[in-house]
Amino acid sequence: MRNEDVRPNEYVLATTLKACSLSLDVELGRQVHAEAVKAGLLTDLFVASGLVDLYAKCKEIELADSVFFSMPERNEVLWNVLLNGYAQLGNGKAVLKLFSLMVEWEHKLNRFTLSNILRSCSSLSDVHFGRQVHTHIIKNCNDSNDFVRTALIDMYAKGRCIEDAVAVFNRLVDRDLFTWTTMIDGYAKTNQPEMALKHFVDMQSEGVKPNEFTIASCLNACSHMATLEGGQQLHSMVVKAGHTGDIIVATAITDMYGKCGCLEDAEANFKYMVLRDAVSWNTIIAVYAYHSQGENALQAYRMMIEKGFLPDEATFLSILSVCSNMGLVEEGKKHFESMSKVYGITPTLEHYACVVNILSRAGQFDEVEAFIKEQKLSTHALIWETVLGACKLHGNLDLGETAARKLFELQPKEDSAYIFLSNIFASKGRWDDVQKIRVLMSEEGIKKEPGCSWVGVDGQVHVFVSQDGSHPKTEQIYAKLQDLKQRLSFSGYIPKTENVLHNISSREKIEHLWHHSERLALGLALISASPGMPIRIFKNLRICEDCHEVMKVISYVTSREIVIRDFKRFHHFKLGSCSCQDSW
Image (cartoon, rainbow, N blue to C red; front, side, top):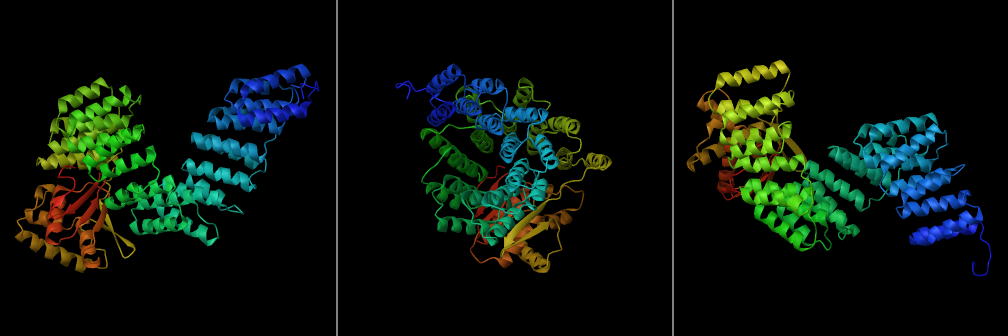
C-alpha cells in the first residue's frame, strides 16, 4: 500500500498496530507510530489504543504511558487497554493507581474495567483496596452484574475473606465453573475442607462438571482433613475423566496421599507422573521429609537438580528440616550456604529457624546463641520457639528460661512458651515453679490448647481428648486398652511416668498415660477396623515419649502397622520400630 503511495487512514494504522501486537513486533510498531505522527492521526482513539496495546504487550510500558497521557481525551477502550497492559505485566500497583485516577477524573467504569482492577487486588492480596473498589461498585449500581460479582468472589477468596466471598456468591444468578472452583479453592485455603467438599457436591448437583483445577482444589481440601476415602474417590474421578496426565492434578494427588499417611501411594503416583515440574519435585521431597524418610528426600533433591530443575525456598525448607531430623549438622550448613551462594535465594526467617533447629537439636547451644546474635534474629518469636523446643529435648533449663522470657515479651498471649517452660520445670521436679507458670497463665488469661487425636472408622471421623469418656464405645475402648496393657507388661514394657507432668502418684500417672488421646483412638480402631489393615491416627500436638514407645510395642504384639501424624511429622510404627528412628 505504501509502495503505491496510498496514504493510510486511522483504520489502516490501527489494524496494522493490531498485527504488530499479535506478532510482538515492536520495531515495526515504532514505524507505524512515526507514520501516525506524520499523518496527524496520533490523537485518534483507534490509533492510540493500538499503540498503547502494542507497547504494553512488548513490555515498553513507559511508551504506553506516554501515548496514553498525551491524549486530549480518552474512552473506555483506551483506559481498559492500559489497565490490561499493567495487569499482564503483573504491575498491580499501577492498576490500582490508574483506578484512583479514573475515579478522580470521574470516568465511568464498565464491567471489564472493574474486573481488571479486582483481579489486580487479588494478585496483590490487597483486600483493603478491594473493599474500596467494592464500595464504588455498589454506589454506582454495578454490583448486580455476574461478571463483576465473580471478580469480587475471586478477590475475597484469594484474600482469605471467605465470609465476604460467600455473601457475594449467594447473590449470583448464574454460577459457572470458575465461580464454583474459586469458592472451593477459597474454602480449602482457609482450612475449611468440609465446606470445600460440600461445594464440590453442590456444584455437580447443579449440573456443573469439574475440571482439573476444581479437582486439584478438592484434593487440597482432603489433604487438610486427612480424609483418605474422599481423596481416593477423587483420584478415581481423575482416572475416569482422563486428567491423570495433568501436572497440577497429579501433584495434588501426591500431596494428598502424603498428608493422609499413605507414603507408598504418594511415591507410586509420583513415579507414574508423565510430566514433572519443580512443584512436583518439591511435593515429593516434602512428603519424604514429613514421613521421616530423610535419605529418600535427599536423593529426590539430588535427582531434581540432575533433571535441570532449580530448587526454591520451599525445597530448602524441606531439605533443612531433613538435616535437622537426621542430625546432619555439617550438611545442613552446606545446604543453607548454597541457597544464596549457588542459587541466589535470600533465606527467609523460616530458613534461619531451620538452621537454629539443626544446631540446637544437636545440642550445640553455644553456636546457636552465636548464630542468633550474628544474624540479628533475637527479635523473632519463631527463633525462640525453636530454641525452647530444643531446650526441652536436652533439659537445658538456663537457656530454656531465657528463650521463654523472650517469648513472654514478644508473644505474651501465646500459650506455647508457658507450656514448654512449665514442662521443663516439671521434668526437673520443680513443682513450685510449675505452679507459678500456671498462675501467670491464669493472670494473663491464657488457656492451653487441648490435645486431641482423631481416627477415621467406616467413613466417620472420631475425635478424642485425653482421659475422654464421652464416646459411645468408651467401655469397649477401655477394655481393649486394658487387654493391651496386660500384654505389654509381659513384653517388658515399662511406662515412662516422667512424661506425666502432673504432681500425682506413680499409679495415677500410669493410668493417665493409658488414656492419652492417641491410645483411645487406637483402641477404637482396633475394635472396629478390618484385621491387617493399617491404622491411621492424627494428633494436633507432639506425641509423648511413652505413647511413642507403646505404639512400637503394640505394632509388634498385634502385627499391625500404625501410622500417627503429630504436629511435627508422620510416625510409621511397624514390627516394633518407628520410621523416625526415635528422633522427633
